[in-house]
Amino acid sequence: MTTNLTWYGHATLCLRTPEATLLIDPFFSGNPAAPIPAQEASADYILVTHGHGDHIGDTVSIAARTGATVIANYEIINWLAAQGVQNTHPQHIGGGFHYPFGYLKLTLALHGSALPDGSYGGNPAGFLLTTTGGKKIYIAGDTGLFGDMKLIGEEGLDLAILPIGDNFTMGPEDALRAVKLLSPRYVVPIHHSTWDLIRQDAQAWAQRVEAETSASVRVLQPGQSFFI
Ligand code: NI
Ligand code: MN
Image 1 (spheres, helix red, strand yellow):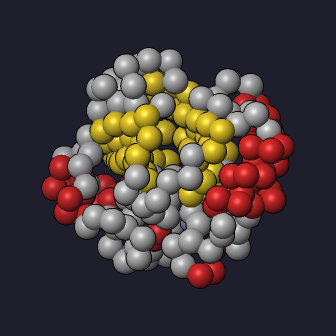
Image 2: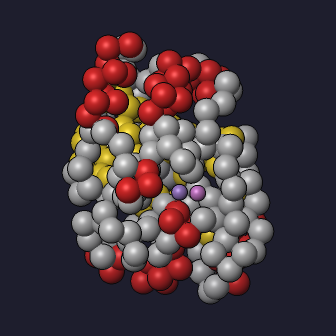
């Protein structure tokens, strides 16, 4: 009962569980780091952390092609439904739901969430997934550091997926502090090096994290996968 994680560059991820393929923040068109075009992405579910264009990305077209169910906050779901997305499931921060692939809860994120046309996108979120096999995976979304990451860490995380790019989200220093609050077994850094503005040395960050915490860092290249 393993779960496979693929990073498609920026904040775009694919989680393949035994039950379903989850595409997270599917930003392919206009993403210089994306190793595949949007047309090649597969999904049973699409999870969207917030309304910004580099996260909602190709959600509408991929949902139309695959029939995937989109999971996001209530405001984003209403906006997507108005764009013609058929299958949706709204949630909100603090709320969880049992899906065939596991229990998914929306978590706090310190960020914005305006949609590409300026519509209100509600509050930004992260995701905490408990797979049917019992693995806990935290996807922070775009966020600054916050002390309540300690509460999330108390759930016992197998994997934390954290932004380290700085400028728009946590940078390397605060992401290291986040690892200390979250205490995950594994960490994957994302939301970095897509553009020069958020370029970071992920390997150097990984060395610091592994020196100062008990977490193991998996530095992926866009298109690379790892099993947890
Ligand atoms: Ni954002
Ligand atoms: Mn972003």
